[in-house]
Length: 169
Ligand code: HEM
Image (cartoon, rainbow, N blue to C red; front, side):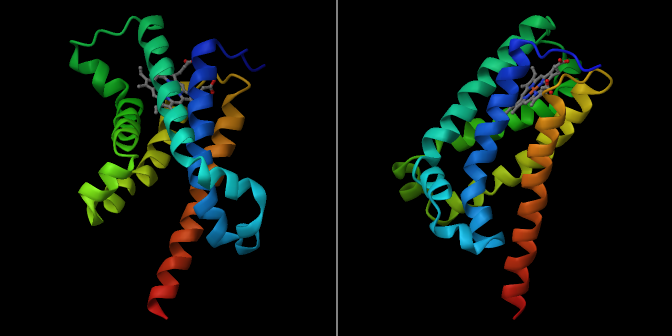
């Protein structure tokens, strides 16, 4: 039997959901070009910054609840080792949230795109985070979380392969 998810898990799931929503429009456009003109990817693209901000805010709530629930000692280096995937993902979300504005795009120029490639690293860290932290005590949110993050990772790998084969041609 799967456990009922506590609020902290809902916040983590919500954060992952909004994060996936920021990636969907670009990935869908390349992998399924016919979706380019459909309304949902168009809407997600126009609201991307707001959706990314929601992902960031929910990750703060999730991280804070988990830290208090598990009484994490922030002065103990073991804590950073045990929660490294969550902490790294959170750092990436923070960098992306801080630089998701016109001023940063202008200031960072080409480096802005490079910096925002970090979003793809977050994908792998997040799968690792959920598998590792939920091992042996899945809630009924866990299969949906893994399916959602796993699917977006697979689609983004297909997207990268397509982009690479276009470069070779
Ligand atoms: C961007 C950051 C993060 C995202 C998107 C995220 C997302 C998630 C998701 C989706 C789950 C699985 C929930 C479920 O299946 O019920 C989870 C579990 C968990 N996360 Fe995070 N997380 C993030 C950062 C963190 C951080 C910084 C910490 C450390 C304090 C943390 C601690 C945990 C723990 C302890 C669990 C297991 C909960 C349990 O045992 O019930 N997460 N997270």
